[in-house]
Length: 92
Image (cartoon, rainbow, N blue to C red):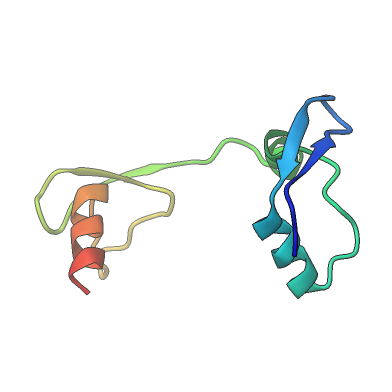
């Protein structure tokens, strides 16, 4: 029903593909307009007002290694490094 379309980004002028899957998603959500920006320009516009993210250092409750997290760790909650967190999520 849908076919890939080649569109031109209004910010950078590069062409990008509006895939059939994306078109179907837009239709399901009731969006009437096609995207006007490529993914890179959409992300840049979305993140333009945000400053750099602050990270905190904590000790992983599982392996004891260093964990960098985007929130202030609390003493009453365990913090896990990326690897240990991924292992826990995979085990669920």
